[in-house]
Length: 297
Image 1: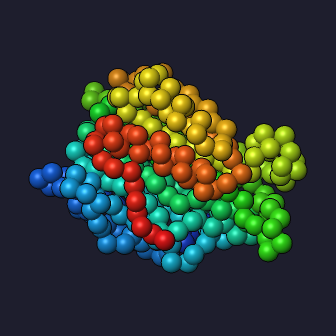
Image 2 (image 1 turned 180 degrees about the vertical axis):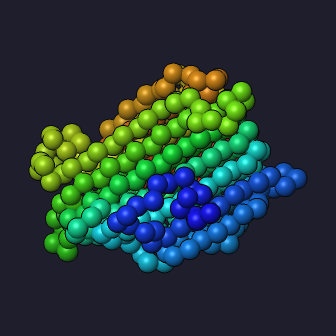
């Protein structure tokens, strides 16, 4: 079976993958380790490391090509098995350059087992002039799984300091909860998050483009411990940052609830600090861990 077919993505008559990555993380006596790893083309991961004694493994995703270009397709498949814990970061920002002819695309499939935990903490997506990008993330988890996904989107800048006019960004995240009696089916839909940004349709600083802000931050959390009290605590925390933020909760499904925090700013650094602080609250409150410090710079 081809990797593309194994990932569950329909074959494309136009695009062939520029990079493919498969990673399976399993629990071994309280320590999370990779039990399957495959890469081809312009995607790979660095050697694993552990930030503390919790057993959570950290992998860093690398694109040696440095950027996404027109018609590029990247496929990422990650499974965190029962009881395993993974922190997945990136080595640097995802840069989208000019995409004449066809958009660049990333398709990511995430699967979490019973009691599995996944933190997704990539660097920002930077879209440059005349860039068009589509990102499709499909998540399947169990009621006892824990998911934290952070993301920042920012426009690239020209040498004179003016903001580039990228063409379009489409970011779609679908999250399904698979119960114990689902028989391995698709599971119930917990949330579907669609983001479409087209700054070329309006002035980049005008009201038609994210209420006058140029940078977008998102934090998605799915866990049985998500509730209104947590949402209120995180919203209060956002007040200390130079950003406009709002939080919403999904209805509960099989005992688990989703939370999405959306934040707007004119600073990548400010959004990174805000999302990092919110994720830090979850790490300390739920697992007794300190805030992330990946020491990449």
